[in-house]
Image (cartoon, rainbow over the protein chains, first blue to last red):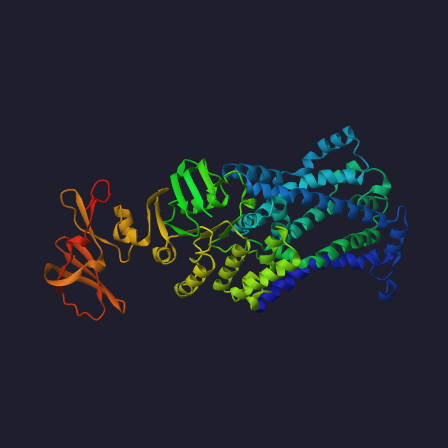
Length: 271
Length: 324
């Protein structure tokens, strides 16, 4: 037990220390970041945050863009993936294995290789500079993963449930609504979080599809902050942006903590 | 109300699961489909319920062909082996879901549910989730759900095989009182011959997708048409003597009695069951199982005999009964 807790403490330091460092950096004056001799009480400032929020466009604009984009991608993905996953569990047995193989292959494909082709599509169909349009490739790219997680969850349900619901007179849609959805809620929550995270972090496609500065997403905007000057690296501002960008995710994970854990351990223990 | 299956065929892949199955169940009659696993009995039940479609043949309820009617609208009440209760809903909501979907009014729903909960002594469990119930309670909730369906036919798929022996015996009369003997036909799938004999008016013994013999429990016991039926019905199993001249003779362990003038045997083993005991002996006509009274004293060498009229004779090649 004692050795376990030592490992846990080590792991916590390993994963939390960089974040703590960023947090401290974001409140440290630019001068103090490169000069250790400045007395402790004079090192602190809120200027990095002030700068970020008063720039044009203000930083919260990027937060809002990213939140909206990630939310739309998540909603779109789950709306399509749940019925699709249900269907995948109902197709004839001899088709299930090949279909699953294709889905896994798609999930493992490095999506960065697609970004030129996607850019071409965006040009062709005038999808550039629109957050709504960007949600399309995002949910398409996350669809394989979502399908895998949700089909696994549906297949984990007792086989007779669907039949029992049919005999009770529930139509396909009613079975999905009253039996399947509540039972796969944990898996749906963890899937949704993963999709949200992807959309929140995605860089290459957002970089190429968006050029208007009021539409930029967080990763792109942050890259601009980091590269805004050739003479210095704005460590403080960058750290402040990181902290602000992490807050919505933290809130989300805290809110859905229970469902996520249940979704991730789903299948490990059958009820 | 009646149920009729006519020349049903069903294949899964290259396996014939049901071959030319005919079955008719009369008004209020309970027919047990009995057989080893893989004999097609559960498939037959799923076809009646509409959960699978037959490749050929017709299924009629009250004279109306229902093959084209989807399971959702077929009005059958089914009890699954796994009970298939909705794990996210408490007992009351489990029962309410179907009623609500089928459009019954709130007041009527409440009344019917509290009635059925009372009948099945589940009032105190109404707000509990299925995972909090014991096996017997889950089983009763499953029964309640099937009863509330107002079905034209009851289908029971090994409803008690997940319960221990004692609970099964307790639930049997309850099942009989609630479902069997109403106006609906009941089809009861089981691999337990005791259960079939206790509950069913007629037993259809199935093997390899066919009905080997159908009849009352007494008919199957006293006049088995094939060796398979003879071996399946009755415990301990019927003795088959060494075949002579292409004829196989079967004799039930309970028809054999001790008799000084009879065949002499050597005792191999002995199981004492209280009221009765089962002996395994070696005789010149092969090994024999014998059931006799529990208080009988048994020596190493015994002589046994039986009435000629208790013998069952089967053709060695076809396994069919020879008329006597």
